[in-house]
Length: 379
Image (tube, rainbow, N blue to C red; front, side):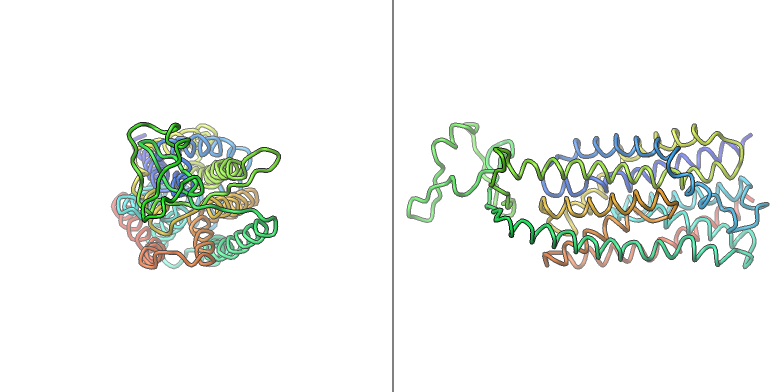
C-alpha cells in the first residue's frame, strides 16, 4: 500500500512539474506580443490544457501504451512500482529543475530519459534499443525541424498575402497609465523635435499621462474589412490559436504521464487522467512565471502575426501527433516554430537560443541519471 501511494505521489509530482514548465507555452506569444497580461494568459492556458487532458481519455490512448514502459523493458520490470516510481520522480525532478532555472524543456524527453535510465539500472543492456529509437527518438528529433520549416513557410505565406492584399501597418506608441496603443498618424508635429498630441486623443486618455519609450512601440494593422478592424480579427485569431496549443498540449502530455499508472494495473485510467490534469493546472498557476518570461520575451520580440503563425503550426502538429499516438514534444514543436519565424524576421537573441538548445541536449542524460539513482535507492 505504501509503495502504491508513493507511485501516485510521484505521478502527481511529475504532473505538477509538467504544468509549471509547459502550461504557459501555448499562450507565450500572446503575452510576448502584449495582447494579454500574464494573469489572463495563464488562466486561458490552464482552462484549455485541462480540457485537452480530459479529452485525452478518449482521443490519445496510443500514447498511454507507449509510455507505460511495455516492450522497452521486460514486462516483469515495466509493471513494477519501483521502476515506475523511479521514472516519475526522475522525469519530474529534471523538469522542475529546468523550471527553476527558467528553461523550457520537454517533459516527453524527460520521460524517455527516465524510462531509459531506470531500464538500464533494472535490466542492463536488455533494454529494447530498437523500440527506444523507433518509437521515441525519431519523432522527438524530427518534430522541431518540421515545426521550424512549417513555421517559416506559414509566416512567409501570411506576410506575402498581407502585402498582396495591400494591408498596411502603422507604428503605434504606448500612452497612458493603462497601456493604450496610439497610431503615430494621430500625432501632429509642431515643426520642432517635440511631438504634440492631438486634442481628440488627449480627451480619450487619463489626465495623468505616461508615454513609454521607443522599445514599446509596435506595428499594428490599421485597415478594416466590412467595418471590422483587421488587427482585432488577428488578435482574436491569435487568442484562439493560443488556446488551441494549450488544448493540444494537454491532449499530448496527459496520456504520457498516465502511462505510469496504467503500467501498474492498479488504477482507473479515467480517474488517473483527471488527477494528472489537476496537478498540471496547479503547477502552471503557481510556478510558470520564469519559463513564461524566457519564451515570451527573451528569445525574440514577437509581434502579433508571428505569434499567430507559431501557434497555428504548433497546435496542428501536436494534435495530429496525439491522434496517431506519436510522442512529440510540445516544447520542441512550439519553440521550433518560433525559431523558424524569427529566422525570417532576423531578430533573435543568439545567447538565449543557444542556452535553450543546450538545455534540450542535457535533458535526456540528466533524467537518466535521476531515474537510475532513484531506482537503485527504492529497489
